[in-house]
Image 1 (cartoon, rainbow, N blue to C red):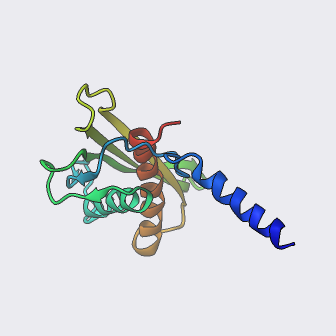
Image 2 (cartoon, rainbow, N blue to C red):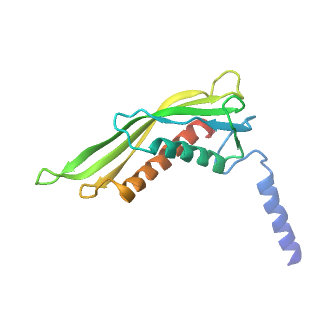
Image 3 (cartoon, helix red, strand yellow):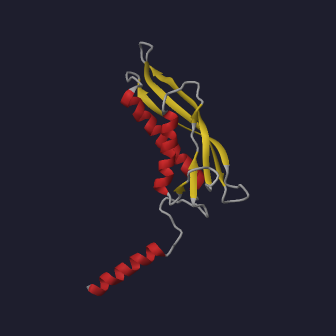
Length: 171
């Protein structure tokens, strides 16, 4: 029985160690060691206070939590640079009731992201792209406070994951 346990342990270690550069997230950071996220300005026609800061922190946190990259103090010393702006933030009615009142309201946020990978000289992984996502809210819900915060958090979770996948995933 003891030999069986040792054999199982050995095979388990061999399986997880056989592919030294495999990542469970599918991330390929190459030779990069650090990243920097510039402040994403809110240039949307409707300005919701604080969403620019929240998005910048959400993107930085996601990259730090899912990679071994170090957060750089400035863009000059970073290998990977994320920058951009919030270009749109709006509410739009989706469906109407018989009283001509919105039964659902959709919050949409659009972010323009520029990604630069300085560790690759030819710039083949660099991009400038728009990312957007939306959340539908009940027409009776007031888009303030916890309702708005929850919707924005859900949108940011999706957009940051899309930016992460576009810039670092090698599927």
